[in-house]
Amino acid sequence: MIHPKLTEPLGNVTSVAMWGRARHLGGMAKAGLAMWSATLLAGCINVTAPDKPIVIELNINIRQEVIYRLAEDAANTIEENEDIF
Amino acid sequence: MPKRVNQSSIKNIAMGGVLAVVFAAGVAVPALAQRDPEYAAAKAAGQIGEKPDGFLGIVGGETADLRRIVNDINIKRRAIYAQKAQENNATLEEYALSTGCQLILKTSPGEKYMAPDGSWQTRTSAAPLRDPRCPQI
Image 1 (spheres, rainbow over the protein chains, first blue to last red):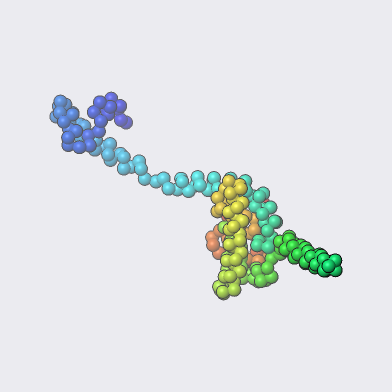
Image 2: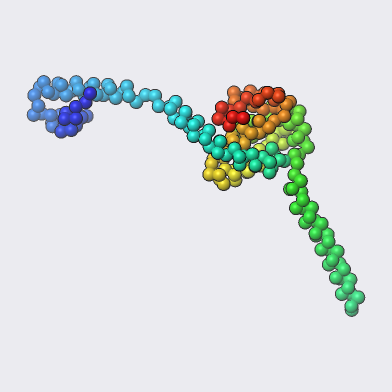
């Protein structure tokens, strides 16, 4: 769980220069911040992985509706153009 | 002088008659359009089959004649799919797939069609193997 009060005033420490903002904190707080950043980064990697199968399934659902909608018109097209069907 | 006028007016009437016949024939042909005999024979023989994507495919060995027949009809089909898809606010692929569902359903026993797994099947009296997205019968 991420506490908003920790993140808002300081932001994530992503560069050495940003440590300057944390200089007024005690050594313990600095160490804690470093650990917290590390766990935050580690957590990010777990979240991003599998999204491909979801996109494909969604696609199939949309297409099937369209195919149903077009069915009647397609039947007429076949009748009107018997020579090429 | 009056004789010459008469002759030319007779000529005009004759030309008009010929033109009328030509026009009548030109208009009548599309209305009577039937399958090209070569295409009908190749389809009945199972050399050409219906694919789920709404286009024709060559089932066995490819020959120049079969390729020509299939390409010719597929080009004409694509033109119609494009026009109809636009009218129906759909993509060409969607319209072609919807047509393909019905074309496979309309095959006669003995004709070839492509199953969703890509294999060629011979149509029997049983329901054909179709894309799961096809409307159920």
